[in-house]
Length: 258
Image (tube, rainbow, N blue to C red; front, side, top):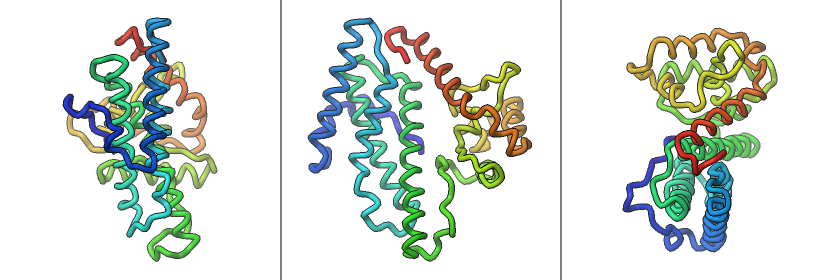
C-alpha cells in the first residue's frame, strides 16, 4: 500500500481523534519522539530519523492490536483495516512529530522508509490471519498453508510472475524471502544493489510504460535466476541498501542522519 502524504493543513495534533483505548499511549510515544529528536538536534545538529520508524511501528501495533480478534470476510478486508491503521500512524502521527521537530515537510525518503516498514507489519498480521483461518477451518477458501508475506501492488501479470517466483524460491530453498529481497537483488559488479528504494521496482510491477528498458531488464534477469542463486548474499543486501539510502538522505538534508 502507498501511504499518502498529508496535505499541509492536515498536519496537526492527531491525539484528539485517536481511539480512546490507546490515545494516551500514542500521545506518550509522540511526545517522547519529539523530545528525543529535538534534544539530538540541539546537541549535535542532526538526529536519527530512522528512530521514527520504530515509533511508527509502536503506534501501528497499538492501533492494530485487536484486529485479529475481529471478524473479517476475507484477508483483503482485514488488510484494508490495517492499512488505515498504518496511515494514521505515519500520515497523521509521525508527520506531526516531523512538524514539531523540523517545522517543514518530511523528506520523501523518510516517508517511504517508514511506509515500507509499516507495509511489512501489515502483511505479518495478514499472514497470521491466514494461519488462524486455516487452523480453525473458519474460512473455506483459506489455502492449506498460509501465503508468504508480500507487499500489496496493483494486479498485473508482472506482479503475478514476481510472487510466483518468490513462492518458488521459498519452496526450493526453505529461505523466507519477500519483495524487498527481489528489488535489492539486481547487483553491480561489486555485489552491491543498484537500488536504495523500491521506486523502480514498483514501476516494474505496475508495468509502467515510462520505466527504462535497462531497469526492466535488470528485474527480468532476476526472474531467470535459480532459487539457489537468488538467496546468495541475501542477508547482506538489505542492510547495505538501507545504508546507501541513509547516506543519500544525509547528503540531501545535513540535519538528518541515519
